[in-house]
Length: 459
Image 1: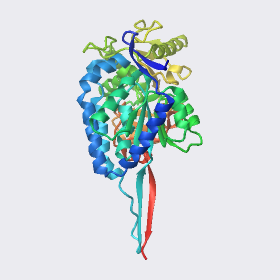
Image 2: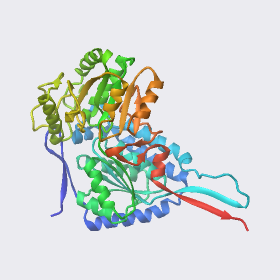
Image 3: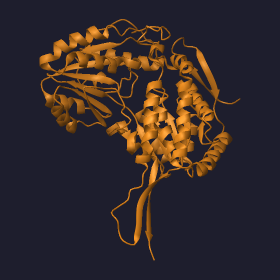
Image 4: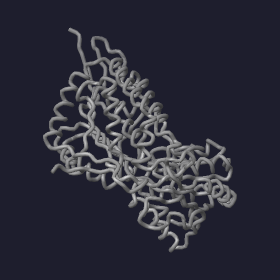
């Protein structure tokens, strides 16, 4: 009997969908189809590729009303948020429009008797290993520029959101993309690692855990495949004494609790300047009281269940450890605190310190620790006291101060007066255990292509 994988819905604990894992021969055939399709696709003009990928985005957006309830069943996100349509369109269309600039030849100063330029060529076959938390946007971050740049793409989606891969594949077919150019495969971890180690994948884009990143690097050893890894995070925020507290509170509450805290760049720890600490905390707690847990199919619900029980139990364990060490819970000390369920209400912890895992290790759930700091120096020291580095935010009326602090922060992106957002014009990247490589923007195209120098001498 063939192996299968199942989506266990966090809404009711029941099997929502089940799919058969691809066999070895099916994986081999998919690679052969991708290689053949890519040879022709790379010869198409950039305008032709961009037009085809635009139709692909259009086809995906057209079925958004069907996608929204599927997401609620698969990973618990409330239907009120409308899926990921806005982000898919913003990022996808921006990257398509950026392509002529990002992929333009680099021409050095004129040298008589020579034609010289550096062009960018597709790497070949790109394997995208996508996570469940923002299952469309994270996948399309690489799928769209990968295809526009002339690559073939194979998608291996997270088990929790298997239907997302099918939706993306259906949109590719509806858009008329060449057979084999984009393929969605249901793969086991072992088969994924074997495929990476086969030497037939040219670039791997992975979003997931630190341990998952290590396994991918190990599997790819000796293949010389390039890769981009976005791994763990423990993103901090620093609220300065001159911050607009109303603005900071509303944005940071959203940054901490949206998507049940299951955001790659969600705010997990907040440091507040001593003069405004009590005022900020009072406002933060009052605002957060509106983030109540409920049925994700109710249009009034703002927080749904976490994607899996084990994720919620991990957060419960961190909260319990912090409380044993002296932390105080201010919001929902009993709601959703019993083990064995994905239903977990948002929580705020104070009297926390860096001896607690809640302030140092990834939570990826609806909890945030808030600490008082004496000055900028202490804030920077604590923000950098982490093995991770994806984003950090500074909340201040003085952008010169924000820029100065940004230079000291060990992270891939520094925000001022905003958080939890990916700007497609910039590079999405991380440092330390958060990973390596980058997606989005011009540098995102560079990660999915390779330079070739053209050096022609006249006779």
